[in-house]
Amino acid sequence: QVQLVESGGGLVQAGGSLRLSCAASGGTFSNYRMGWFRQAPGKERELVARISGSGWGTYYADSVKGRFTISRDNAKNMVYLQMNTLKPEDTAVYYCAAGVALGSYDSWGQGTQVTVSS
Image (cartoon, rainbow, N blue to C red; front, side, top):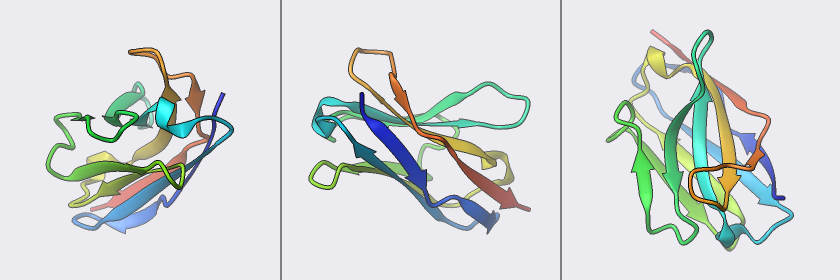
């Protein structure tokens, strides 16, 4: 299983930007589909964006489409989430996840807090 460590969270004002990073180790990174999830207090964890192993295929939740961009660097075993035009409703703990089988994620990071103030 791959190990994942997120970084880059913090406090930002509405309209601002943050870039989350996720470092992977212990596996063949390009074999993994990567996803960014988030969980706000009292809410279920939701998929924000995902990217295929090659990096060519991406998906975004409607709530972040046009504002967030997921990318990966397979040479560095890194995946990123660029978040622009942040809104207070984007406040959540953001998790990086990796999976091989379609629809499943087997490895999770510890999460990084993103707080957007109004």
